Image 1 (cartoon, rainbow, N blue to C red):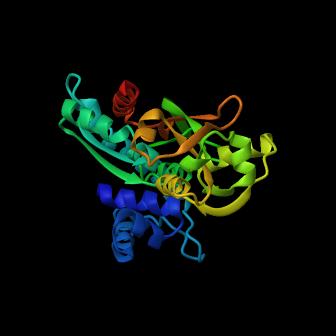
Image 2 (image 1 turned 30 degrees about the vertical axis):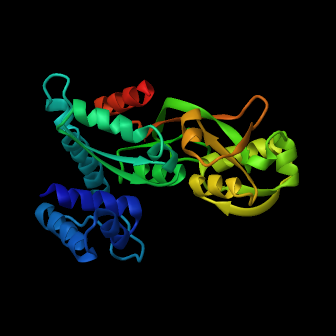
Image 3 (image 1 turned 135 degrees about the vertical axis):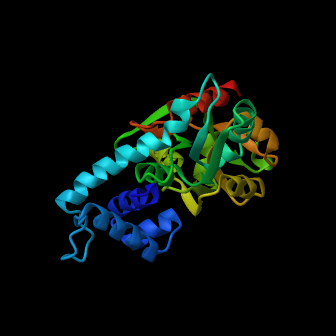
Length: 288
């Protein structure tokens, strides 16, 4: 029995197919199939019911899955558990939204790496909802996301680390006009509704009964800022003062009364074995 074979079993169960499991693990479907065959040969049981087209675990397969998840959780947390003193040892698979990558996360990771040289962190980007799914599927250990907006996967917890307000931004020549006037008279550059930030914006627009004339929908905050600065329309974005210093010249007004804000923090599984890793990263983010 190998840990790779156990990871293949868990991935198949979570994703519902050998092909998707192979893609997630960076393996070929034949390699994943071989892992399953090895486990079935070693334990002399069938783990999957092959009489159906869809992937279905047998009773033995469900029991094997429970034990495989426990073994992998124990193994993945071993580095942290065995580390002596305050040093963190092991690997953290971290996801992050673009605003975190363009904001405080790089500095926080640099400080964390300097303090814990034996800690290995891999980072991948995505929207909050996508990162939440990947945590639920076991592809990531944790992610820096917007505070969750329903619906989102069960069994996850969110720890706030920092926050900022939402702003209506427009070209500099529109300075002086209030937020409602900008939104009702200028073309609206919408933050992607699939993003949790986009859902918060939509909810607040409805609450204030502000009609907008949508010009385009974009999932890049940087692109929204540049388009607004060039007079293509107005946008609503979550930014703090430091990020405005790096943005192109813009007119801005607070969005909402009181101003709409969002929390940014660490999203992880309730049963995460990376408790010390998480606490250290949150502390570095709050240090900003």
